[in-house]
Amino acid sequence: MHQRLDYKAASPAAFKAMLGMETCARESGLEHSLLELVKTRVSQINGCAYCLDMHSKDARAAGETEQRLYLLSAWREAPFYTPRERAALAWAEAVTLVASNDLPDALYEQVRAQFDEKSMVDLTLAIIAINGWNRLAIGFRVEVGGYQAPSVS
Image 1 (cartoon, helix red, strand yellow):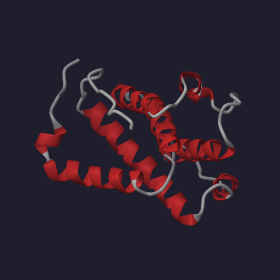
Image 2: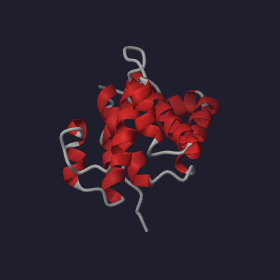
Image 3: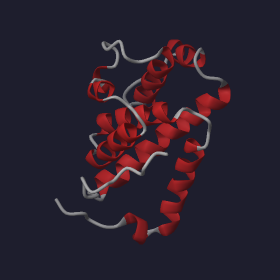
């Protein structure tokens, strides 16, 4: 497959808007490891190869274990995730699939037990952002495999 177009060059303002959401999520105070798990899980659901490549590399560069990344699609059955991560992953799945699923009160309460109001909004923004990036990468067939994770110091 070949990239259909370079969305960054085609609409710099749209790219800047997406970067603004990404920056807000990244600077929100949510744990980097949690954000990478959420981005990876949402990208699995959406089938975004580019974002899976990027976020698995970023997660590993930041110290995430191979085991947790390999089992992420089965996080409910794997004992390697904290209650906070489980709540974030459940919320990420529900928000990503909102067109075909409900966001029940029980799920909201599970997430609210782990996150304050600001963090819930920030987490939801991060989920919205990765869903947007997935759709840009899939829609315009961004070429997969060339991404290099930045060095973590």
